[in-house]
Image (tube, rainbow, N blue to C red; front, side, top):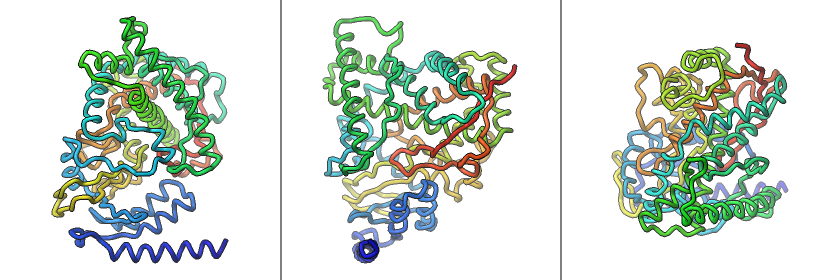
Length: 467
């Protein structure tokens, strides 16, 4: 074993020296950093914030730098001004997102929906999905499901509960009704675990493939049922139009063919974006409100001033009045963006980024975590401080990008923000919560180093609030 590790270390060093000496023409003026410390941190399964600390130390504060991983040189953008240049040029979806040739487990799961598609396919389904998301926004549905959550919480008061699991339960129900017009109930898709990038015969991959087979069958049945309802002009669910129905109706109206495989891929993307990421942000916000009780009291005071002292479902207009709640969510998204980086793009032609002319065929990416936490653009970025979004602190619009920006920004941005505001405000009216004394997250929130971030053993203690 020692000999194998030694060989890997020396092979990696030799590879790094070889890569360093093969900087593509036209990029000689951009600093090159070693990815070896970063890969080593991943190999040791460090928590994600520690991996990001390693990235920050390795990149040495450069606004733009080169890295080389497994033979691919990538330009990394770490400056909001450069990032603006890059993202604004994506209006026509060029350069396209880079696609690996290998059909790994993770890639097969996501398929070719909005997250990974390019060109005409992306433009067509983005055009179908945008109005569908607007039609699906409903604080009432989120509030009704939150009331159901209260029934579950009543059996778990005054003892530590896994808040991430609870938030996954509620977000999967919200997604089921708003996106599919379907109540999940006891179905446990909220426990779907992402696989490794390639098809390794690991226990995690085996568990994934079993769950994925069931998940694909479930999605296929829903698509068939919804397509049948639309073709037979059946009414919507209690007068509500879910996202899938809206997309099918619009595609019929505009004569756009939507095959079941493509709809499946789109629904998978919506499922992940509207479920896993939202669960992560909700859990993190609740964690910070537990860690800082004075912030929790201020947030609760704001909700009471808007809604009164009884647990009710806020309206869209009332949600707009909750400035501090919104600042809490935005600060959580800044410090712990659920997706830490964007998928690299491969330049089809030279592109000017700041003072640099990047050549065609080079990969270009940005690290959302690094930009959101860059000390050049944020005062005390390691400090959780919702006030920064309420005062007059000057914030560059491209230094806060948890949803990316420009034409390829997250299509579910308004969806998830609405959902979070409703759930947090209703929880504040009903409960108080704290961190257990023996919490492993007492000092900081620990995050698993996965494709999408999730907390490690995050437990909170809820007690009913006396009015």
